[in-house]
Length: 394
Image (cartoon, rainbow, N blue to C red; front, side, top):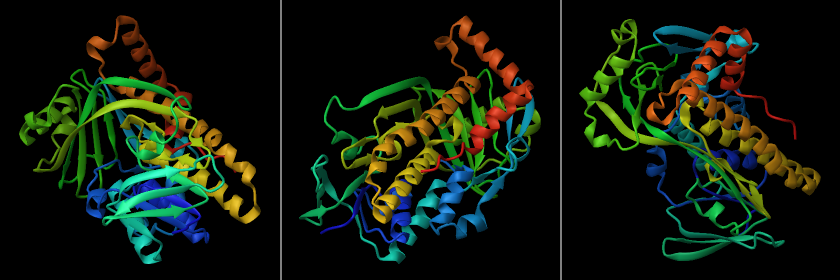
C-alpha cells in the first residue's frame, strides 16, 4: 500500500487531520488499534474553543454540532460561596465556546471518514513506523492476521501518550516536562438536566467541583478526590450527597439527581515533550502533551496541532514548501505551552491542595483569587484563554 500521509490513531485528532487532508486532495490512511465502538466509548471533554469550532466547520463536519451543540457565552466561578459570572462574549470581543461532547465530535468524524471512502483500518496490532529519517518512511502493521506495509511521505502520530509514535523516537531526542497533581477528578455522567445553563467551576474546602453538561438533558459532574480513592467506593448516592455539600444552597436545591451512566476517576497531570517532530514523524495531541482538564484544553490543543500540521502539509503539497516542515514543532509548542500555563493556573486557582500546599502557597492562591476576580484585566485574562488564543498564520 502507498499513501501520502499515514495517520496512527483514529481519535478526534487523527480523524480531523485525515478529514482536512482528504478534502484538500491529499491521500491519507488511518490505523487504529481499537474497534470503532471502543473509540466511541471514551468519555471525554465537551467544551470546544472558537478555533476548534471553526476548524470543524472548515472540515465539513459541523452540521450536527451547529444544530445540537450549546453555545456558551459565559461561565461561573464560585469561591467562598461568592458566585461570579465571566461574560466571555463581552470580555473577548464576541467570542464564545461550544459545549459538544468529544464523543459526538468523534462520531461525526468517523461518519465523514466512512462516507469519504478513504482507507481506515480498525483493530490493527504491532504498528511500527520505520525510516523516520529516511527519504521514504513506511509503517508496518498487522490486520486480520496479515502483516501489511504502507509506504508514505509523512507519518502523523495521533495515538496518545501510550501509543507507539512517541515511543518510536530514539532515546535522548525528546525532553519531557511534567507536573503531577496530588488528586484526581471523580466524574459522573447522568441523563439529568444540568443544574445551571452555564458551566460552574467551584472551589470548596472539601475540594473542587465542576458542574458541566453534554446537552440540555445530559449532565457531567466532577469532584476533586484524593488519588487513593476507588470509584467502587463511590455509590451514586454518595456522589450526589458530596456534590450538594460542596455547592451553595441555592444551587444544590436545583440539582436533579439520577443513576450514573458512567463513573470514573482521572488523575491530573501536566506533561509536554519537546520537540514534537522527528524526521518525517509528527506528534499530535496527547502523543506530545497532556493537560489537567481544569482549563478545558485537551481536545482543543490537539485541534491546534492539527491546524498547524494540516496547513503546513497543504503548502508542502501545493507549493513545494518543505522548509515549513521544520516549523511544526515551534508553532505547535508555542500554543501548547500557553494552554498548559492556563490549565496549570486554573488548577492552582480552584483546587484544595491540603497538606501539599504550605502557608505561602495558600496565601498566593488567595491573592490570585482576589486579584483575578476583582480586576477587569484579570477577568479578560481568564476569558481570552478560556475561549482559546488565536492560531498563528502559517
